[in-house]
Structure formats: structure tokens, C-alpha cells
Image (tube, rainbow, N blue to C red; front, side, top):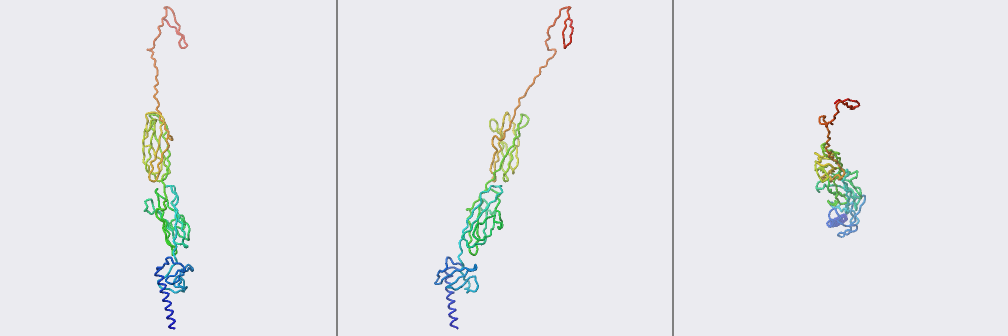
Amino acid sequence: MIRIRIISLLSFLFLAASLGAAQSQLGTGAIGGAANGDTIHGVVVAINRTFNADFVTINGRIIGGDTANFMVVSGFRLNQPTPTIAIATTPGSPVALGSGNKLSDSATLSNGNSPTGTIKFQLFAPDGTTLVYTDHVPVNGNGTYTTSELDGDNPGGFLPTAAGTYQWVVSYSGDENNKPVTSTQGQEPETVTPASPAITTTTGGTVRAGRGVLTDSATLSGGFNPTGTITFALFGPTGVVDVEQVAVNGNGTYSTPHGFAPSAGGVYQWVATYSGDGSNNAVASAFGSEPEQFIVQPVQIISKRVFLASSLSQPDVSFPTGHRHRRRHHGRTAVMHP
């Protein structure tokens, strides 16, 4: 009986020594590229997976793992190799500022061993350092995941507030069977373009000399919190005759602060130009779309001729002595005596 126990103890020590040699070569907790049937220090390694649990056999005997009823050598375990997972990302299309469209991203996991865990989407502002958006999406196998996933903790993407180039970075957390992986910042740019506002104009109408000045107004719409200026330029028959400028503070209607009274009549043309800013493109009204007429009316002098009775030349009427002269006046007959 003592001899049998000694032999059993020697067998166990041999297995432990072989296992220790395998551990020394492979490293604790990892196989490092070993496969089924590999021989390490004369020991045949078999890597098995049953009921989602890892265990190792040496020469056909279970010596470690997660299943029940096996011999355990304390502090040593060989795990299944961890496959490398690939992540391919695709940013959304360019977005116009103020359009209401959001920045979005998608990531495709592949080569994973039934991957679980999470994918983290991060969006950085155009300065490259300011984090403006984060979304965590749970992973359930290889496949494509997006910022629109409803089971994410911040789904929907990001509504930009400034123009420029944003950068997406996507990270997979990894799990017990898959290594983590992260995309490189700079490989997923998504552009936000400035808003393109519209400008419509209304002239003051025909003006007559001495009765007013030429004026213009411009309505700015579709801008994203626009600032800057609107410049009103008035073109006369010989070129620009007046330039006026107003500051812009949001969408709305802006008018010439003074107006202009030309010295010559004719048709004048207004052109209104919005300067644009960091969030809005510049825009101008078309030349010829804002005619305004200025009429110089000549002064008319009406003269009246006034006749005085004293200034009238009277004809020399003489009658012979002793004769009567009859003269009809306004239907009556008058008898004039010399």
C-alpha cells in the first residue's frame, strides 16, 4: 500500500513538473500560439472547449480548467487563444449646419469569436481634442453597429453647433474571448459645412425730387445664428453713388439707415450683400433685381397776361358835327353824340 502511494505521488509530481515546464514556455494564463497536439517538453497539450468552459489535458488527463471533477494544479491554467478582431468604420455624409441633420457613425466587427461587450463611439470637435459626443452600444456577435442603435446609452448621433471637420473614434471593449481594438483618430472625418442663407430685397419705390430718398431693405433667412454685416450699394447711371452698411444679429429684415437723394433722374439699382461668418456662407442679391426710379420733375412757370384799361390804345373816333353815330354794344344800340 505504501509502495502504491509512493508511485502515485511520483506520477503526480511528474505531471506537475511537465505542467510547470509547459507553463514556463507558454506563460501563465495564455497559450501564446500553441495548438492541439503540440508537444511541450514531451507533453502533448490538448485544448478543449465544453459548455463554454476552457480546460487543458496533458497526456489525456484533465489537469486544469473551469469544469468540475478535474485535478487542479494551483496557480496554473492555460486559456483558449484570443482571436484578433477587426473593426471597420464608416462616418456619415457631410452635414450642413442648421439643416437639422446629425453626425453619425457605424462600425463593423469581424473575425470575433462570438464577441460580446460594447462598442464605444466618440466624436471630437474640429479642434481635435474636445469630446462632444459618446455612445456605448452593446455587442452581440460579429456585425455592424451604429450610433442609431436604440439600445445604445446615447443613441441618435450628434447635432453640430459649429462648422468644421469632426473626427470619430470607435473602440471595441473586448471580452474573455476577444481582444479589444480601437480605430485611429483621423481616419474617420465627417464634415459640417456652413449654412447657406438666402437674401431677399424690397426697394422703397419711385421717388420724386424733393419728396424723399431712395431706400432698400433686405431679409436674411436660413442662416445659423448669423452675424456679420449687410452692405447696401446703390448704382446710378454712372456707377456706385451710395454705400450703406448695417450689423447683422440673427435672421430678419434690415434696412438702409439713411437712404440717398440723387441729383439726376433715372433708374437706380440696389444690391444687398451679406458678408457671411464662420457658420454661414456669404450671399448677395442679383444686380438688376432691385430697380428704383428717381424722377426729377421740371418746374413749370405759368404766366398770365394782365390788361389794364388805361394801357389800352384807343382808336381815334371822330364824328362830323351835327351827325349822330349809332354803335351796337353787347346787344344794345347806343347813340353817341360828338
